[in-house]
Amino acid sequence: MAVGSNAPVIIKRKKIIGGDGHHGGAWKVAYADFVTAMMAFFMLMWLLNATTEKQRKGIADYFNPTIAMTELSAGGSGMFGGDSVFSEETLSKVGTGATNLHHLADDRSRGASGLDSQSGDGAETEDRLETLEEMLTGRSGESMVSNDLLRHIVTRVTDEGLIVELFDLPGATLFEDGSDRPTELLRDLVRVVEDVFGLVENPVALSAHVPSVPVVSRDNPVWDRTAGRALAVKGLLADEGRVDRVTGNGDRRPAVGNPMDMRNARVELVLLRDR
Image (cartoon, rainbow, N blue to C red; front, side, top):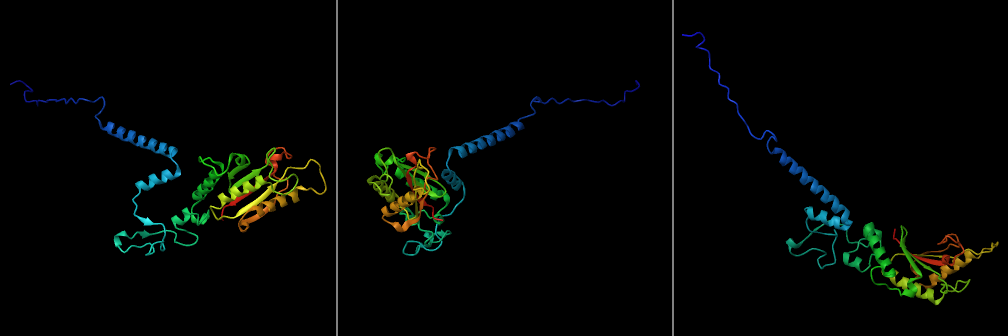
């Protein structure tokens, strides 16, 4: 017998696995999840940029679980004070309460609460002011003012309220020369503005402005003139009880750079925000 014939036999088996180059497909799942998340993110950013605040609120409400509820927490305009004789039709009531400060929706649509900031949020008040402004300027397609009158009107919404500025033009002045006697043009303008302001119940402020006089004198007439003109506009209003203040500004706040320009001769009617 040869030496070493009892040595163990060692068999080496080599296992060959295909696909070592890309280590399987698990990374594809993770990459697909990442791409999906990025697509959702960019869609979200696009929606935020392409929608208004009201539309975003509607989208958010759609994805939030909600239950039907009434706006008011105390009664309503119905026979049973907002309740129904059928329990399944009774809505849960969480809200502001039906008071003089918080009107029903149908009351607000008729202007019962005016532009009271306590009956709605700031955005709602801003929308109502802009609606009244559009009624005067015709930006919504229709205007309550003829073209001859419209060229005398400039409007703007500020923190104080809706300012309607009526100003002189060459050959068409609001007051007779150098006086506080209103012309027929001013009477027509005030009548139109008052019709729009009559849709709400907010107080009104009046102010008058005049250009500077070319000659400096000890008794500057601009103060008495603007005070008289502001009071004259107050007398043209059918409801003088709404007037909160009357101001004569003299020539201190010119509308244009040249203080003697006739464009500075103007009156302002301000529909104040109810604070």
